[in-house]
Image 1 (cartoon, rainbow, N blue to C red):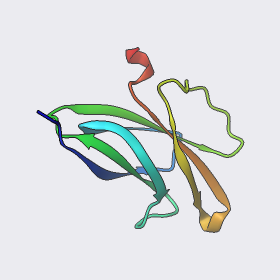
Image 2 (cartoon, rainbow, N blue to C red):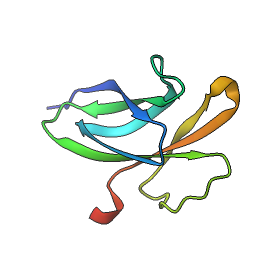
Image 3 (cartoon, rainbow, N blue to C red):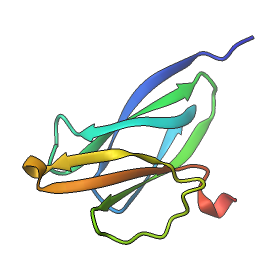
Length: 102
């Protein structure tokens, strides 16, 4: 028996940390500026498994030069997003499992 997978999309605000509950979350794939709110939000595409489990994922957004302290082991880099005509640059990470659950 195999588990089916699919790709879904979510939006997060451009802020240091955002936590979302995502059904069947496996891992994040790609980031881009929001198509509807490009100055305030980022779109994230992620892979899911067809399982009936909701996963808590914490997304971290850091501007170039900003310091951060999350651990890279469970917080992989997803990608970089340019907003405001390329004047602002955001680097996005997805934390799962959450550090406090380790």
